Length: 270
Image 1: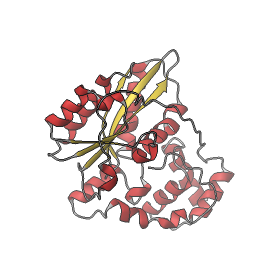
Image 2: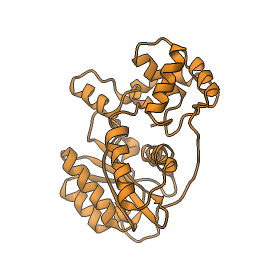
Image 3: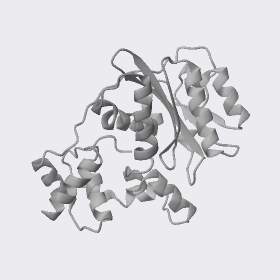
């Protein structure tokens, strides 16, 4: 009963966004010794498993004559922050219109460092997200910025900002979303843990919800399996103190959560 009560509190606290693996990790952070299969069993009995929804919509228009850049990210071995940023755009449906979201993520810590909303797919939306990321992080020269081949990222306006801050542009192969898997994973997490759970009147209400989800929840509260079940903020603080294992090593330490072949009921793992 103690374990069941703790599971219910965590599930409600995270608005049913957590699957059994993350809840198991959270229980262990609280000092409980519990097997992930037992957590799954209890969550099934209490109908607390997150619901998966899959929806794929293409928002990338690469049919342009702008310059396309080589994929630099594929050859990188990361060991710190502000070495590789990844960017992507998705659509969000409101009651009476569509709006678009552009995000930029630090690939090493999985932290969202910049984002912007707009009613059109114009390049200015992506530029605003980039400028916000630069203002927040103040990266040094040589950072690699990776994206798909969308015209927003190939536009002169966008490339000028990259060059002004001595960033290296990098682009995925044509029609290959796996080259930008970190952003794809975040977009799925955002859709399934926030967007599909709510209805928004207009862009202003949506913006407030996204700001809360990204800045307060995703970056500061949500545990990431690839970071050793830490939040991006915790991971970056541990790096500053010299106690953070590299992200790839942190993921390997949590292979126990991958042992079960049963569906995990967990969405948007990032």
